[in-house]
Length: 333
Image (cartoon, rainbow, N blue to C red; front, side, top):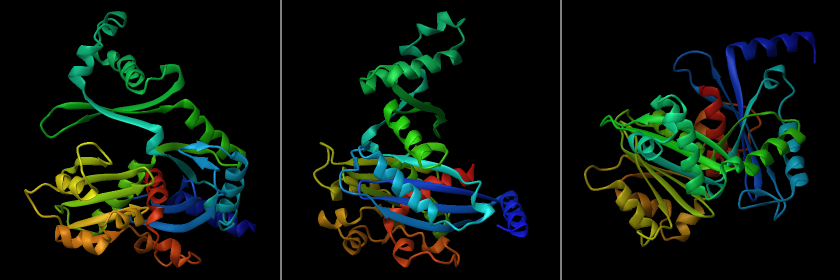
């Protein structure tokens, strides 16, 4: 690379932040590279989308069975990126499937009451209760010793003033497998995030760009284990649903309960393996007609902004929602 190009790349990384989202699925490795200028309300641009097929059985239920095949696919995907200094400072995030992740939201007051015995050992400071209390709760829910768990948590306040502790936990081996496999491919991960959360982030971004601020819409993400659905309104995520679940007879039943009857929907976004919703008797035209609104597949195309050499199939593929959402997390921080 010439000195001029090196300097240009250095200046670009100063004025723009670049990030890569890596979605390692059972069928392929999908890579999304996005960028954003370092100023308030700057638009997010998709710079590159890539997909490299994986052999059958390389990934099963979140387990990296054939690491050599995954490493080769990662190297091939990153090897297709342009040779520019601006791409050398990529923050990289990799997804973790829902099947390997346990999530829970617990009222802060109940968590402290349940695990108040920790307070005496830390001088009676209620804030100090949280770390051991969260670990104890994750251990109980997952049925795995806390030493074998990787746990992330945060305190969130609802509109009614009640504080909730959001907990995400997974077997540490899943995290280690991703960090080690990426390292073998020459990639340093800056974050590991749940695939449903990343897909939700991608489609909420689409909603923030394409809909009014007070819009009320559904986000649906489909994977081999089922549907993840969220109701998004002016206050953010207002409710969520999973299917299959004992309380729902069908996907349509689950979505009707999620949408409620109090107000109409403005839109439905669908990402992931959207053919599964068609197999359930709800192709997008039928879904939209059922709820009286547009039902749209997630597409990265509106954010590509003329980026060259991105395949049209990738731009319009709803399966890139997770990779896009992973990269989005890193450029928005």
